[in-house]
Length: 112
Length: 110
Image 1: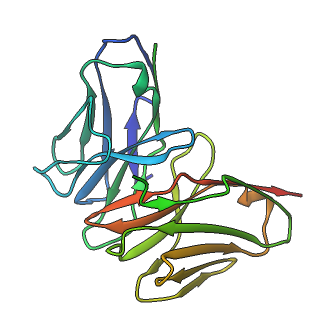
Image 2: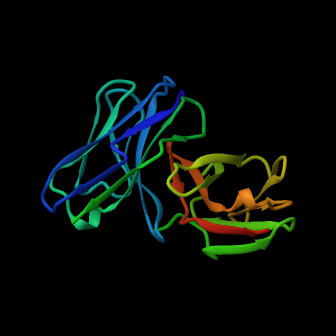
């Protein structure tokens, strides 16, 4: 099915470990986003990429890096994971000129 | 600083009755508003939206009302069905990105 695919779905890390969350979309969308969802906090924007080759910080970028590898793929990297980064991470994409974001199924990350 | 606010974190409603969810925003530059629905262990899915130039948009059982002067929007679901039990997020678009509220948990009682 067309859409946004995130890997892995689940991951457990120890404090200080690094990892990369992968996201790919096959809808030819220009813009891609990474959000995190925490209980009582809603969805908060970490980073976004308005188009291939550009990335910008969102509300909560500290501790994360991103790479817009090509038009399809947008990865989120945690260089040194902290327990405060325990969360559910959602990738989303949007077509140019459209207002609706299409979300992936999420990646649940636990940092011990 | 939360730009999109959803109070009343949870709502229980009897099947067949109306569910009303409220959302307030602070940034007058927002030009488009959306509601998303989220089931456990799934990503949010788009439900309904409204442009800032309109005051009402209807899609089947779902209606969104926008009051720009009050910076307030609401989602009406009527009649509510058990399958509507989910978390509902209000979102506002500005500057190429969406700002989300904290979400409302809706439970529809059969």
